[in-house]
Image (cartoon, rainbow, N blue to C red; front, side, top):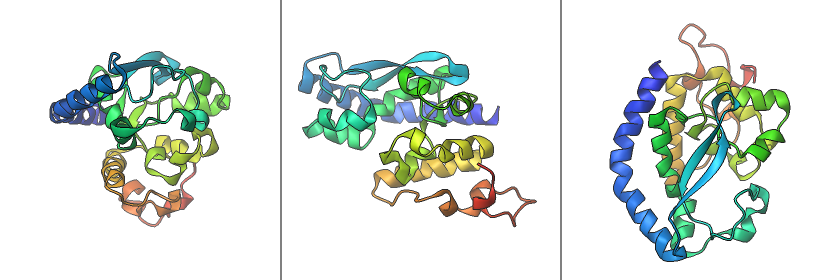
Length: 210
């Protein structure tokens, strides 16, 4: 309940602040492609229920909607749309999903249906026991350059240790990453206070089962 309250409060504030940015991003997208500037794609949400995720369009309309990340380089946008994508401005409309309850500010990245189906079944089910997030532990790590399936330890760790202070740290690291701060190299680099309980201050972060 406390996480949901934090999500709704945070998303309500952020969407007001982000509205002008989203409007400018939409105008840039429309000027670039002369198409409706919002891109909608089916993703897998909590309890493996599909939902329609909205982003600002930053890829050409001819780009296949299900192109995997590993093959996305051939479809990279240029100019202002590259800037929008590189700084994740295209993802700001997802704040509406947080208000609706289909997403959280922090959580596992919602995968496309075909990528979700390709994950190991136990890992796929685990990832959908919580709401997917706009940002998450995997997104603020160096593993973000690879596929989620290559480094499942980040999602496993987050789900096992989810708490408000971990969410707050991930949100801070998301902002810091956009400002050029180094990404998390491994789980052992997490600050201990983020995941320790007050009565378990001697447990090393790397020792928490993932």
